[in-house]
Amino acid sequence: MVSMETITSLCKRRGFIFQSSEIYEGLAGCWDFGPLGVELVRNVKEAWWKNVVHQRDDMVGLDASILMHPQAWVASGHVENFTDPMVDCMRCKRRFRADHIDGENCPNCGGELTEARQFNLMFKTFIGPLEDEASQVYLRPETAQGIFVNFKNIIDSMRLKIPFGIAQIGKAFRNEITVGNFIFRVREFEQMEIEYFVKPGTDEEWHEKWISNRSDWYLQLGIRKENLRCRPHEEDELAHYSKSCVDIEYLFPMGWSELEGVASRSDHDLSVHAEHSKKDLNYYDPVAETHYVPYVIEPSVGVGRAALAFLIDAYSEEEVAGRKRTILRIHKDLAPIKAAVLPLLRNRPDIVQLAREITHALQKEFVAVYDDTAGIGRLYRRQDEIGTPYCITVDVESLDDRAVTIRDRDSMQQIRVSVDRLVETVTEKLKS
Ligand SMILES: [Zn+2]
Image (cartoon, rainbow, N blue to C red; front, side, top):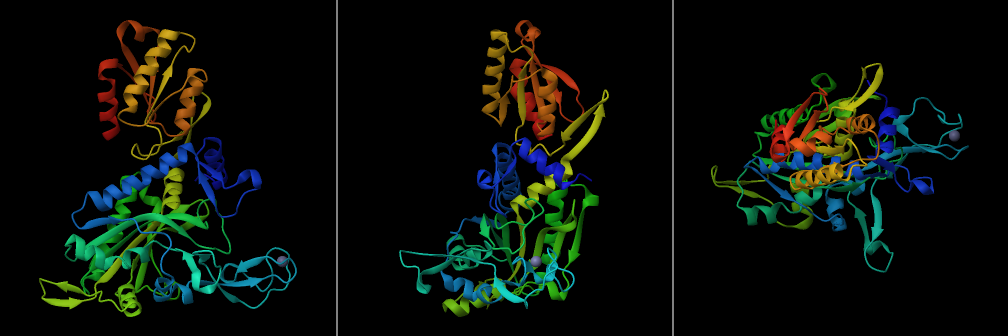
């Protein structure tokens, strides 16, 4: 298994992920996606959206605002319950999560610790010019509540029949006491969440279906089966709103850890919002001819966490002709760059011109780049390391036969294809 240091270093060196505000010594728990990282996360989100919204008849999307009425967070229980117990070291003043330390003393200096206190993980800010309690709002700690408060709007406008779901991708913020393991535990992150509404009594069946659907999605995108497992939550680790929850865990370098949570939340959320808002959030079931508050299944994953798992699983090293070759064997749908066009001789204007023309033709269909900043061997290695599935080489012969070479990232096999058929060929290969 690759170490987190190796992945972190690759991500920085190749422009995937940078520490936030690095020139100011960084901001803990915040990360920036660089030129390749932003392409990767866009692809992860696109693959998810396609799978859970566009390719289903029972799902719709939503993009709710980050700031919500503060009462929504009172209703959801986050103001009261979204807390972690924390202890402070009386000597070095560091703060730790009480449930993250072993023993009685400070893990940093051995000093004495305070009693545990509850610390709310929601970030606060203010609406308008007055910074008083009445204008206080929260940066949402999850996108889910934006879905619940829009339940009625969506039912009324979209004529949906249960079972159906609402999907959302968006930023969420948690003032975690301890952050770490690269982008695994962070303070600002992007979530991909689904609230799937079902008739009470069918919730267990749908819970199972979603656990299996979501696991399959990772496998389809190249995560190895042996690195994925499902773990039901123990009673004492269930969130305050959960009836039951199963974590889809991935074998990260630091050990098995949560990749995605699939929670069964009963009618808790809709019921508390109905109570606090005094609005009717019942659903009229035309088949059963009855009103009820639907139960809900919630598959929820962080975009960054999913991207990290895909990077780790794709990373490999092999020896080719006595030299180390690093390859990111990432699924083609997720690869930041689909094809790189490399001129064999960069000082030949006619070769460069043809290579540029080819690049522009490819760019109309997918992400393609032109690179002539090094010798061909080095250019191949660079593209292998960032997971580019195909390299297209333009050589002297190309000028005569109007053909180029396509090199496959994984097998390193090369085929010769006419320039006229290049776009079509690579497009087909990317789909296969
Ligand atoms: Zn200490």
